[in-house]
Image 1: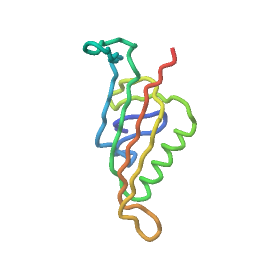
Image 2 (image 1 turned 45 degrees about the vertical axis):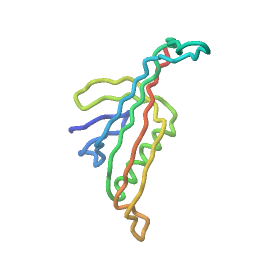
Image 3 (image 1 turned 90 degrees about the vertical axis):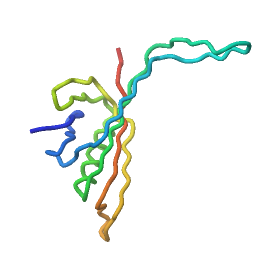
Image 4 (image 1 turned 120 degrees about the vertical axis):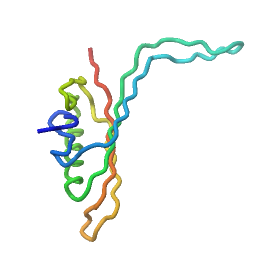
Length: 127
């Protein structure tokens, strides 16, 4: 079965009817500026920060609503989850910081015909 990414037991990809179309990866180099009254700010190294991933997509119908509920159930466990991409590369442990959905074209039974969604993952390092 092909997949884009697996977060714990949750599979992103066409085979699971929940593919993403965008991924933003942010890493922090640990640099901060310290303001100096009489000159330019100084740079100071505080240690590398944690990475974040924002994964975005669009999905349709009640299937998308169910898949987002699965993500929220994983989030409610409050444990770090392994993240593995479709080529088998292990990205380490990540926590689910945010799950955001925007429902549109909602029909009379409350089913959204289109859902735009994003999840934000925070790198988990506890060593």
